[in-house]
Amino acid sequence: MQDDKKMKVKKGWLVVEVGLEDGQFQRFVIPISYLYHALFKHLLDKAYEVYGYHTNGPLKLPCSIDEFLHLRWRIEKEHGHYQHNHHHHHRLPHVLYFHSC
Image (cartoon, rainbow, N blue to C red):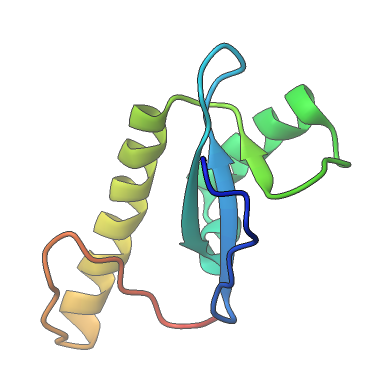
């Protein structure tokens, strides 16, 4: 990211950097609830293998941006299905909608 200023994020959200070693990283702000999702845990295990536990700055996720966007879509789809069937919320397109844990 060109702007190196620290991002302020709302409580319950986390900044991650997504990208592969040979490419550029892109920052995303994700809900902390992602960290508990089984699909995301696999990505966290991969991040540990590549970077270890101690890194400077945001959590780095070693995958392509396209893979991350697909993973985010799958998590949102699962959560949206739950929301629709149990809480009758109207979902806006292309918006992540999560309740806090």
